[in-house]
Picture: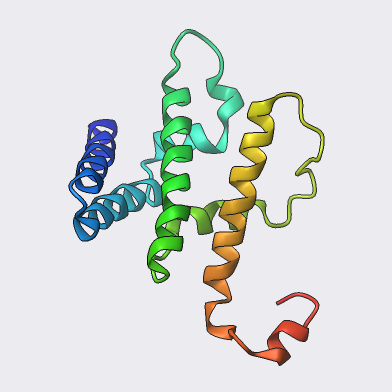
Length: 146
């Protein structure tokens, strides 16, 4: 049921974009992002422990990760378009990743590079949201760690 609701949000987002109704599209995207930000425990575990779910023939974890990446990309785009769109999902991934020194510079495939670019864009979007109130604040930006 959760997946159907999420897919519906994505489908209606696409439909409203095609209809050029940005307000309705943002509403559907926001609903989908709200779902992803408040995941049920069984879905959240897929995101927190993907290696555990990579075993066996059930590949539902792959679909969840795909939806997460898709919504994250759209969230970054909506943030650029609207400016005041709170990036819920992006903020969650930024908080989890911001102190991770393992973010590499070696890539084994084009997909790895693509994922690194996505992560960078998400982090930049989250950081821009977190620092949105400090435009022109030289004291704030003079600090080593804002």
